Image (cartoon, rainbow, N blue to C red; front, side):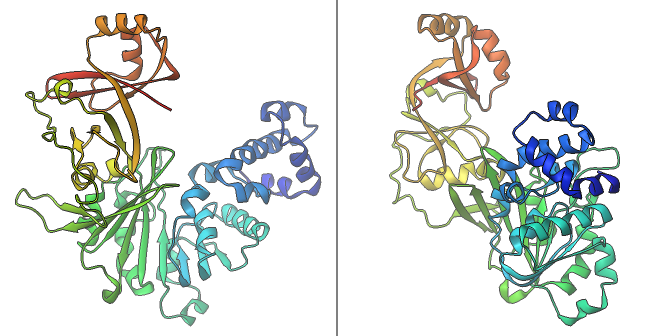
Length: 425
C-alpha cells in the first residue's frame, strides 16, 4: 500500500463503493469498478477475510494493508493476552491487533511503528475502533528506548513492554532465532529492563520453548497457543521485578476455546533434561490403565495391547514437548513424544481429541486395500504421527481418496506399522 492508495481509500465515495462491493468476488470487483478498481478490490478481499480473523476490524470497516493483515495476530489469540496495568508499550504495532486488546486492560498503550504509512493507518483504524487510549508513535523500538520523547519521562516504568518481532529477512526468508528478528530483543534487553517491570515477547510458532529458559533464565514463563489445531503463538514472559518472578519456570499450553494447562518446570534430572509437573492433576483423579506403558520398542505390539481409544493431545502440548508429561499425569499410554496416546477410557476434561477405535490392523497396503474395498470405503480422512509416508502416499497405496466421513490413523511403534480405523461422531 502506498500513500496515494491510502488517500484513495479515505475518500467517502470510494468507501461507499467498497461497502457496496463487499458481497462480491474481488476479481469481479476489480474488473467492474469504474475507477480505483485495484484499491477497492484489495480492500474487499481483505475485509472479507477479516470477518473471521479480525471481526472488530471488519465491523469498523478498517483499512487493511495486505502485508500488515497477513502478519497480524487473529483477534481470538490477541484476546487471550490477560496482562493488565497502567502503562503498556507495544514496540511493534503493525496493524495493531495486540495493541487494541492490550488497550482494554491497560489505562494507556504507547504503540510504536517505524513505517510512517502503517503508523498512520493504525491511527485511523484505532479511531474507527474507538480505542482512544492508544498513542501511535512513528518510531522504531531502538529509537524509542535510546531517546524517548520527553513526556515519556512522566512515568518511571511501564507495567509491560510487549514485542512481536518481524520474522522475515531481507529476502523474505523466515527467521526463528530472536537475535535475527527485528527488533533484536536480546540486544535491547538492558534498556528494556530499565523501562519496564515485565517483558512479553511473541516468538515464532516454531520457537523451541527450552531456548526461552536458556535465554531468559529458569524463572521464565512460556505459553504455547493453538487455534483450530495449529500452534499460532509462543509467548515468553520475563519478570524484571524480582518480587514478581515465579519460584520455578512455567509452561502454559493454551487451546483457544478449550482452556489452559500449566506445567511447573522442575530441576534438571540426571539425564540433563528438564522435567515438568502438571498442576492441578493427579493420577488419583484419573485411574490409570492397567496395561504396561507403551514404549517405542520392537517388542511392543499394539494389536495385543488392544486399547479402546486413540487420543490426540492438543498441538500446544506437542509444541511444548509436554505430551509425555501430560500422558504420565493422566495415566494414559504414550507411544512417543511426537506420537499418539492410547487408553481404555477418555479422561475427564482431556486436553485434545479422542476417537473410539474400531479396528487395529497391521499396515500392509495390499491387504488394507482389499479390506477398504470390502468395507466400501472409497474416501477417508487420514491422520498420521510417527509414520514415514504422507497422507497422499497412503491414499494412493490404499486406492482411496482423502476426505469423507470416515477416519483412520497411521502410526509406528518400534518396527511395527499400524492402520487404526476409528469411529467418529
